[in-house]
Image (cartoon, rainbow, N blue to C red; front, side):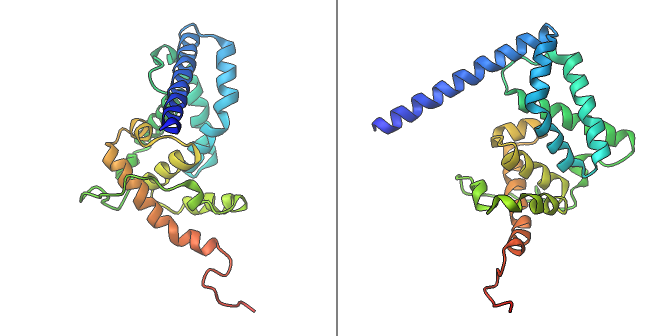
Length: 212
């Protein structure tokens, strides 16, 4: 009982700290504080570029969208009200810019890129989420995993990236992708199912047979 109380208190403290941090960022952006922008770029630049690289699979396009995203943050920072985490808002901007870019090139939207009709039928799953450690078995496999993700459908790749690389909650992913929570869960678990055969192939001697 005492442990549960302490855990709840710790969660409230973390939530309060995050909310306070969001408020500081919101005030800084409304004032066009250049120092705040520098700090945000320093803190989030690697995560943002990684997200865009996974989403596009093209470095040139990812870097162009990276620059556009920060320009949008600079010019429209007053729209950030601090209610959501800054990284959630940042990834939403980046995703919207990619969709705009795709429409200009007469490409399909992100939703239309997915050939599988993952939302055609209800997809019920267990409430407990899988740990990233269940899928990222060893740190040295991360580079291989990054290559594997590029083989997945865009929507699956995006949700897996946001969940396991950026550690966003399912609710936050729903905000970024403008998708219902049920759709996010469906894409996450279907993406993991599609990813599993590749992960098994990354394991040495997966079949247990002697290779000698």
